[in-house]
Image (cartoon, rainbow, N blue to C red; front, side, top):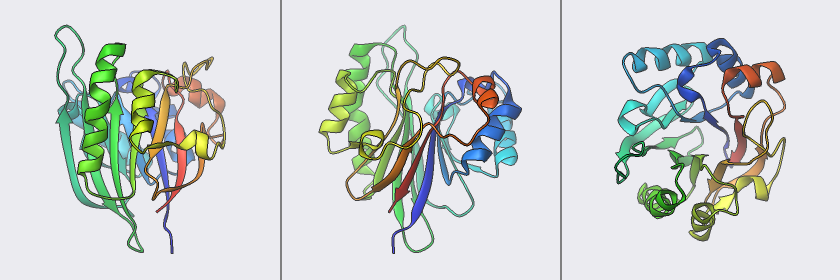
Length: 232
């Protein structure tokens, strides 16, 4: 019988905003897995994300400073089969980019590979990194796999299109459920945050969730979260 997994992708802007509102938003989404972008990564970063985990009932699986910002968190029902961090080729003068990765198991035998990413602000670097991200997801070796993150471009962008050309489906396009636009949080005008899945993943619904308090969504960070309900 398929296992349902609630996966949240969320750019939290280094927890520089209202962290209590951030925790409330995450709890309202009741995620099994959270793919974080812009996790804290400087002095004291681990202490801050541990506090966020305690406030939301989640534990840190991978990422953070070691992945230059992307991070994966999970609920206790997720068993970690493997976890790792990877930095992508660096362009001098730009922020270094990386990936947080994991293979998770759930009750009933469901097995899910997950990559959290935050692509570059520069289009050329996004195009260079996109195939490397897709390769890393495939290398995790699980047929059911999800790439989630802040892609820094709309679905028509070159990197976004490259990822979907590699067998990844845009979960919003498959089963839209909730809001579409994710940035900025106070007046969303673009969909630059996405959840992409391989075909063995059944998308039950995906979009900006309606459950969290709108005031909390605006106060928590400068992006809106994307919640995907998946069956594996």
